[in-house]
Image (cartoon, rainbow, N blue to C red; front, side):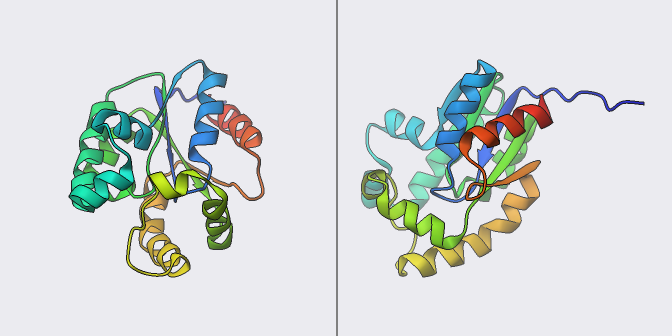
Length: 178
């Protein structure tokens, strides 16, 4: 007997900074005919300032609280591709709510690739403030180690963005899930 086709009301993209969530999200939303929301961009518009400004003025905890609220706003939405910030998986209750009816896709890359992508992305200076006071490589390694169990817990699918192009990932997600 054949497997029942799965139907999802939304796709949630998770993973560390610079793993391609926004790029894949835009392409996937276009392919599915759904809306696309980058949660960090949504928060910047809602708060009227960059993430860096929020963190510098109010601290990381204030940003994380706004992130939690925004995640709750999108929990019941349908026909949506939502790209989360790298640390959003730390909000476990909100992740559980978002996951309902959703396909969660985890995008990964090596520490070296993440650092290289961050160094050449002009948004790094304005949108990606340091998460700790450590050197960039140490910060990425430490945070990845802490977050990977959460990414793994919530993910339905996992793709390496070093070996697959955004178009290939979109095709695979579409084939496997819809």
